[in-house]
Length: 236
Ligand SMILES: *Cc1c(COP(=O)(O)O)cnc(C)c1O
Image (cartoon, rainbow, N blue to C red; front, side):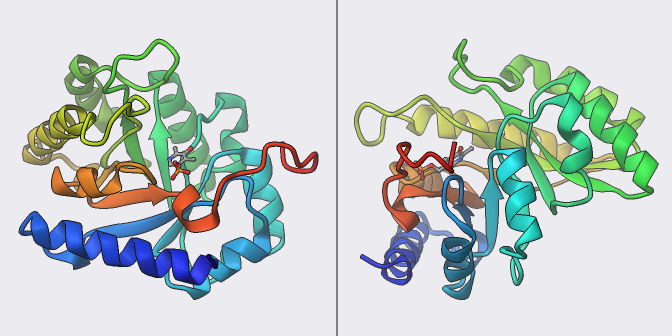
């Protein structure tokens, strides 16, 4: 299957899932998770109409930006971001989806202030409470939101989650539902630099389920580009 055929299939599934849930398909965006795929594959995905690209690693982001791979679509950062690398990401991506600590919020604020810009971000929630994953625990969200007015160069656009790897289809429904509830809670809390309209959840194996539970942005890699080859030495 080509990237074009894969994207057409994902789009058809997205539309079907939205309609089955009584939702408008136009309110759900498709973010291509481009890790380990080269600039040519990224350009092809953009030609085939993905709404944005999501990059995991700073090194890959920097390399593909230098090759103008993302022309025609916004690029987001979706991987774990170390505070010492914020300078390579802030101002270069439309959205940092994976803000997972107070220290990182502080570092992004400082860099955005230095550049004189406002950086859009999502707060990542560790919804499955997994020790192996980063992100705020659900109960940490309210106290973090109270601190957001201290970060005038940031704008919180919503929440992002990577639920546990699902064992059987539909298993992550409860996590998606919890995420939806959290996002409804924070949408009600309006403040100057909180403007919530994005709920980023759902990947290749579970995006239809995520759409059913209110996702407005799915991040899809394998179902667009095929399995990632971890063997290729130039793509670590
Ligand atoms: C890789 C990745 C995805 C996409 O995963 P697939 O299962 O290949 O669709 C989505 N979100 C994040 C944060 C990722 O790292």
